Length: 395
Ligand SMILES: *[C@@H]1O[C@H](CO)[C@@H](O)[C@H](O)[C@H]1NC(C)=O
Ligand SMILES: *[C@@H]1O[C@H](CO)[C@@H](O)[C@H](O)[C@H]1NC(C)=O
Ligand SMILES: *[C@@H]1O[C@H](CO)[C@@H](O)[C@H](O)[C@H]1NC(C)=O
Ligand SMILES: *[C@@H]1O[C@H](CO)[C@@H](O)[C@H](O)[C@H]1NC(C)=O
Ligand SMILES: *[C@@H]1O[C@H](CO)[C@@H](O)[C@H](O)[C@H]1NC(C)=O
Ligand SMILES: *[C@@H]1O[C@H](CO)[C@@H](O)[C@H](O)[C@H]1NC(C)=O
Image 1: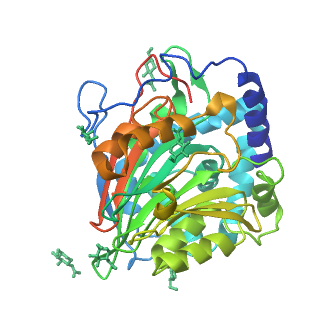
Image 2: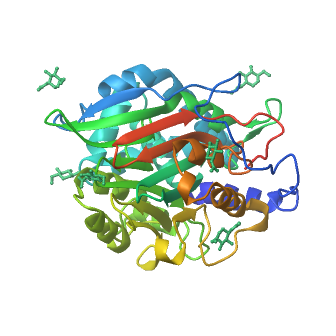
């Protein structure tokens, strides 16, 4: 499965090059202001909150949310199946997914296999298809994440989640079909144990890993995809074929959010645990200077880039490229975001100004599904559904 997904990805990526001049108006705009709190005709609304009780058995804990989200979840899965059939016509791939993937559920570490079973039953969807849906996020997420420290030493962590690259451009609607379909699945989740919050996350209903989350008073964490030719998704394929040494990236972030008790412990786990594909982990702590971008290959930690206010580095910002290398010219969200961060200045950092930065094209683009804002010391997480009306850059 993952083989063919990769193949489409590479194919379309190559086709895409050259078709786009991203640093010209109207695709690139001057730093926005006055976008927060969002309002107006293009505002898609706040993200709804749900509670997941970790004291319940893994099979049980997602049931009530999934009953609510059954329809949009099945819409997305139908769409993924259509794409799969496009890659390998005749429906053979989905037959394979339904036949092969359920057998792999038992190989997932506790509690993920049981949780996915619970999701599949609540959604009345075949188990293999829910697992496929969970695998998809590991493969198609591009993003912007930033942790910034204001002049008083308070930390803010914000991110745009861009999802669905190359998963079918809808010409009529001028949008990425899957990005549209995913919007109704975006949820904020309050994970509780003993009736107390353990961590919070902005996520997609039906997905048991985590891409964005906060442990109030302790740390904030986001994961961005790292494209790499040596490494890539080989690990995912190896895992399916039986080599299960590495951890799924978003399962690792979930485990860290759930069980790590300090910034340092989170940092150690994220830099040392073997994972299935390269990734960037963007981590913020609860005190001045505690923020970093961890650049990972599957087996090792390549770099930890730390906040350093003495050296005038009062924020760390990561898109989908190693920070010591230039971004791909056709996908430069990094410099526009940095330009706006610089223009805002450390003194004026807040939810308002971070939201403005993440609302500036092409940091905001057609793939952007949500923007999340986190303030660890206040224990505050806010997320907003996004839309990027024309003219807007496709990614
Ligand atoms: C795309 O546009 C068509 C009509 O042109 C509409 O029926 C459909 O709902 C739109 N799809 C999405 C996902 O917005
Ligand atoms: C959990 O907290 C809520 C609100 O504080 C309270 O109403 C409820 O009874 C508590 N439940 C348990 C099991 O302690
Ligand atoms: C987090 O930081 C805030 C502000 O400095 C402080 O009041 C709070 O006690 C810290 N929380 C923890 C758990 O250390
Ligand atoms: C967190 O730790 C508990 C207790 O060791 C364990 O049961 C649970 O599965 C862990 N959670 C995750 C997501 O790994
Ligand atoms: C932003 O500011 C930093 C530090 O002053 C500087 O190194 C960087 O070149 C600036 N970037 C942009 C895009 O303005
Ligand atoms: C700080 O940001 C706010 C909101 O964007 C803006 O109105 C204000 O002018 C900014 N202040 C400074 C000193 O840049």
